[in-house]
Length: 446
Image 1 (tube, helix red, strand yellow):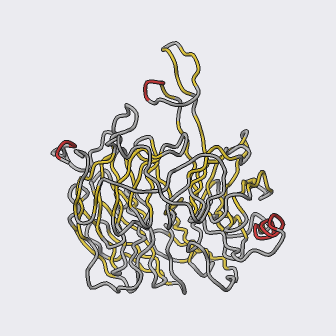
Image 2: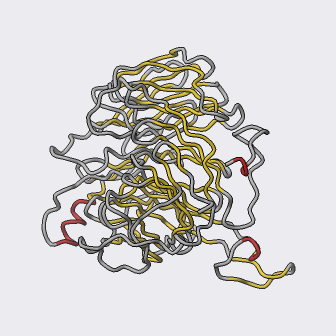
Image 3: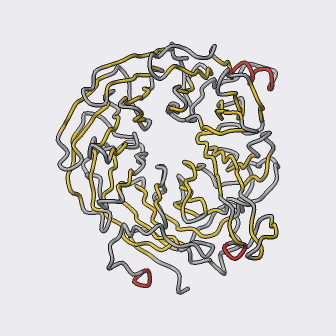
């Protein structure tokens, strides 16, 4: 077929489980079937380039890369960590390295780029948080902890906040690297499902989940507890009728408002998804069906014309028909697929079954969701109903979260290749005005 593309194990054909709606149980014996776009693909995803990045001399254990790419659109740069202990700065137009910084551990943390100071922060499995000059990769400071730092740090009001796998939350001065405060909880022994929770800094508070099943809010300035710890593991035990095998809260909390009141969404490995009052931590709603969540995303789509998309509720307007704004809470799991929940009450809007291996999580891109599958590759999903729009099979699979800006997407494959794609929006959307691939990029070239 004309749309098929092959390059180093990459092909335009994707065989994935049929993505259905509803809340049916996923049977272990279910066989993958051809998605409905197999014969008539949307041709939405176009590969721009694929560049080997990670050093071939890296340690060969389980083949995976988990570093999410940070995008600097103004200077067309990408920042990404890898299993070869490096933090790379790349030219977004072709993926060529501009500089590389060596650490003493794998770099799974998504970097944080600060354009105001032109620096990049990131964590590594050597237990340190690093601050580098984004121009040349020179070290500004290194703050050491006693456990790996694999979640993206947060910069707010001159402070950098981060958490490590030993359930320690740290706040440091962004300029000097001096510690301002820290909080620690004793980790629960055993295996956690998906690393550890990241941080949400919002409204003068720091929200985080822990491996013992607790969710806590701290004062962003002093580190003092602003909630009594909320025991989500107890909720899991009450829902299931017995003690859960996994207590951990691995998803980074997500901020929202319900009827004007601030709430925080969190997910327990076996307890489901919760909406907690942001001020007190009291439970607003709980959906125990969504088990094994590894990523939460609040999809917030503004009001738009019906000519831009073919689905959605409509209302009359002076300019014709328009579509109501819509919010959905998207939960990614390793076993039961993607779920879309109604943010106001936690009810299920749709559920998409996924292939073996699960997904790293969705990211917004070109009016849709770009999803990476650990055993397959990339595919584009409609946020309105969870159905597949298009996909690309990557033989080695993708465990890292993709990144997107406008219509441009980037991801690191499990064998350490940087993959850049352009997504033609499934509706008549335009780009954000920033061409990360340069003015010479032509979609027809691919």
